[in-house]
Amino acid sequence: MRVSCSATSEKGSCLIVMVSKKGLEKKLSSPISRLSDRVMREKLFKAEQNETLFLPCVRLSNYEHLLLVGLGEPKEMSPENFRQAAAAAYKQLEQHSLSSAEIDLSLCVSLLKNTSALVQAIREGLTLSCYNFEDLKAIKADKKSVKKIVLTGIKPTSEIKTILETGQILAESTNFARWLADHPANLMTPSVLAQEVQKKFRDIKGTQVNVWNKERIKKEKMGGVLGVSLGSSQDPRVIIIEYKGHNQNKSPRPLCFVGKGLTFDSGGISIKPSKNMDEMKFDMCGSVAVIGALLAIARLKLKVNVIGIMGATENMPGASAIKPGDVLTARNGKTMEVLNTDAEGRLVLADLLSYVSEKKPEFIVDAATLTGAVVVALGNVYTGLFTRNQSLEKQIRSAAACSEEKIWPLPLDHFHVKDIKSKVADVANISSTPGAGSSTAAAFLEHFVDKNIPWAHLDIAGTAYNVSNRLPYCRPKSASGVMVRTFVELARQYVR
Ligand code: BES
Ligand code: MG
Ligand code: ZN
Image 1: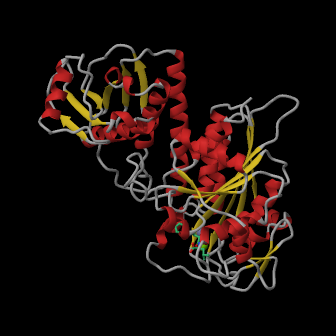
Image 2 (image 1 turned 45 degrees about the horizontal axis):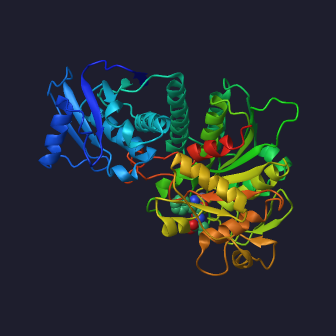
Image 3 (image 1 turned 90 degrees about the vertical axis):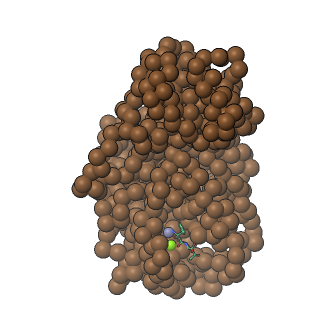
């Protein structure tokens, strides 16, 4: 889909107008604002956030159709209102098989101080909405796709053109992340994931991808990744993406992103109930967030050095599977007692966190669909944030405020560390007491991070998929690509 910007109206099939609850500016007494006033007065349209009113064949100012999209309360406006309104508009275009439209921004730019942020959000909302996972349908739906959107009513300065491209890169990278995770587990095995990453990054300047197979994983002493993979016929992979955007001699320390990449989590011997088990193909969403973020950072050519590492494996109850009570040794030499084979994500992350700790990074941030407990605590709205480093916490919350992906801090302290003591090993993979399952999981991970490195853990179990009920630019039963945009914003803070 092409999204361009033009100062003057192009006239065509459909005009989109975004309206706040106070209506369009009174001074514009055009036929369009008169019509919008009238439908609002008659309560046919209240301009609630994402509410739409499609008026076909009105033939106003040379447009065939008019589409009104609500922005909600004018006093509480942020770019997210426009991101969502753009998605609501896109859905209407799709529904009415319209392949092109114009959005007249002159009628809504005054609602937000930061025009660039508004334009970027609209670009993101549109591009995120055009993602749909239909690769596997042999019989393709016979519908027209939206091909072209023109934004009018603002000056197409070079700054606006750049910001449009930034929004496009962020949304396309998120869509790539979604596409990887939306594949069923039989088609997106650890080896396929590694191949897809290699294929994607082949032409991305400044990046290098390394893939470790089972032998190499063994040699690198990654007992957690290896252990989790043993019950599956699919061999594991560790995928490392390096981006060097800083080409000065005194290259700064790398930023490290770590992702859980369970291409399927059956629970292993501690097997999960069958209800919704299909959703465990999404247990790789931490790793796709890292992949998407690296893709965007490299395409935006940010002047930073970044390492992304993913542990890709299945968790299956095969004959060689690890059993409750087994003890595994992680890369840093610590032993882990596996009291529940379904708490596998932390076993995989243990090795990855130890590995990146050796790289003397600026920070380590991991993303993982780690616990059902975080879904209980925060639902599908907020991602859980765990860290003891206040400065990193501030940076992440400010990055998330920028991207408008919601994050909420949850506790991690010595109580949680106590709860995962093991009788036979250095640490147990589940808590000895009920409750606070997301915090004890974070306490487990902490064992594998060098104490001198700022580290934060993001539990995305609630936000990684099935979020279409609250975000109109996400599809039902599909991955959201959450944290791609936030990770890019975080990296941006280190550009110098
Ligand atoms: N992948 C799951 C967590 C999960 C649950 C993700 C729901 C998305 C939705 C993880 O591997 C897991 O099974 N965690 C267990 C840990 C428990 C055994 C301590 C859980 O949360 O039940
Ligand atoms: Mg599990
Ligand atoms: Zn899992």
